[in-house]
Length: 77
Image 1 (cartoon, helix red, strand yellow):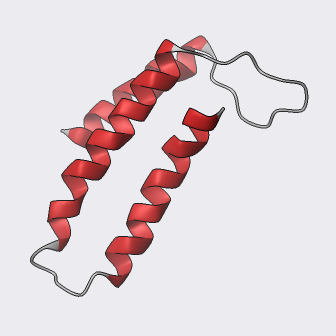
Image 2 (cartoon, one colour):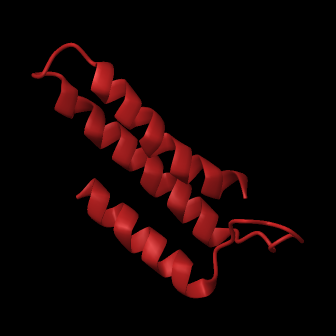
Protein backbone atom coordinates (compact mmCIF):
# COMPACT_ATOMS: atom_id res chain seq x y z
CA UNK A 1 0.00 0.00 0.00
CA UNK A 2 2.80 2.40 0.85
CA UNK A 3 4.55 1.77 -2.47
CA UNK A 4 1.36 2.32 -4.42
CA UNK A 5 0.73 5.55 -2.57
CA UNK A 6 4.34 6.61 -3.20
CA UNK A 7 3.84 5.88 -6.89
CA UNK A 8 0.92 8.29 -6.91
CA UNK A 9 2.38 11.04 -4.75
CA UNK A 10 5.80 11.13 -6.46
CA UNK A 11 4.51 12.44 -9.83
CA UNK A 12 2.15 14.84 -8.06
CA UNK A 13 5.00 16.27 -5.98
CA UNK A 14 7.20 16.50 -9.07
CA UNK A 15 4.47 18.33 -10.99
CA UNK A 16 4.12 20.86 -8.18
CA UNK A 17 7.90 21.32 -8.07
CA UNK A 18 8.12 21.79 -11.83
CA UNK A 19 5.25 24.27 -11.78
CA UNK A 20 7.20 26.56 -9.46
CA UNK A 21 10.63 25.87 -11.03
CA UNK A 22 12.01 29.24 -12.25
CA UNK A 23 14.14 28.14 -15.20
CA UNK A 24 12.62 26.72 -18.38
CA UNK A 25 16.02 25.40 -19.50
CA UNK A 26 16.68 23.21 -16.46
CA UNK A 27 13.09 22.06 -15.90
CA UNK A 28 13.30 18.99 -18.21
CA UNK A 29 16.29 17.70 -16.21
CA UNK A 30 13.88 16.77 -13.40
CA UNK A 31 11.91 14.40 -15.62
CA UNK A 32 14.44 11.56 -15.82
CA UNK A 33 15.10 11.15 -12.06
CA UNK A 34 11.38 11.29 -11.28
CA UNK A 35 10.59 8.75 -14.00
CA UNK A 36 13.35 6.43 -12.74
CA UNK A 37 12.07 6.65 -9.15
CA UNK A 38 8.54 5.99 -10.36
CA UNK A 39 9.67 2.89 -12.27
CA UNK A 40 11.56 1.59 -9.22
CA UNK A 41 8.48 2.11 -7.05
CA UNK A 42 6.27 0.39 -9.65
CA UNK A 43 8.62 -2.59 -9.91
CA UNK A 44 8.79 -2.88 -6.13
CA UNK A 45 5.01 -2.70 -5.84
CA UNK A 46 4.61 -5.33 -8.56
CA UNK A 47 7.21 -7.65 -7.05
CA UNK A 48 5.73 -7.55 -3.55
CA UNK A 49 1.98 -7.19 -3.91
CA UNK A 50 0.30 -6.43 -0.62
CA UNK A 51 -2.86 -8.29 0.26
CA UNK A 52 -5.78 -5.89 0.16
CA UNK A 53 -6.87 -5.06 3.67
CA UNK A 54 -10.48 -4.64 4.65
CA UNK A 55 -11.65 -1.19 3.63
CA UNK A 56 -8.58 -0.52 1.44
CA UNK A 57 -9.28 1.95 -1.33
CA UNK A 58 -6.23 1.06 -3.44
CA UNK A 59 -4.95 -2.40 -4.37
CA UNK A 60 -3.05 -3.87 -7.31
CA UNK A 61 -4.50 -6.90 -9.05
CA UNK A 62 -2.34 -8.99 -11.43
CA UNK A 63 -3.41 -7.07 -14.54
CA UNK A 64 -2.95 -3.75 -12.74
CA UNK A 65 0.63 -4.68 -11.83
CA UNK A 66 1.46 -5.40 -15.48
CA UNK A 67 -0.12 -2.17 -16.68
CA UNK A 68 1.57 -0.14 -13.94
CA UNK A 69 5.03 -1.44 -14.87
CA UNK A 70 4.41 -0.90 -18.60
CA UNK A 71 3.16 2.66 -18.14
CA UNK A 72 6.03 3.49 -15.78
CA UNK A 73 8.50 2.12 -18.31
CA UNK A 74 6.96 4.24 -21.05
CA UNK A 75 7.17 7.28 -18.77
CA UNK A 76 10.89 6.61 -18.35
CA UNK A 77 11.51 6.19 -22.08
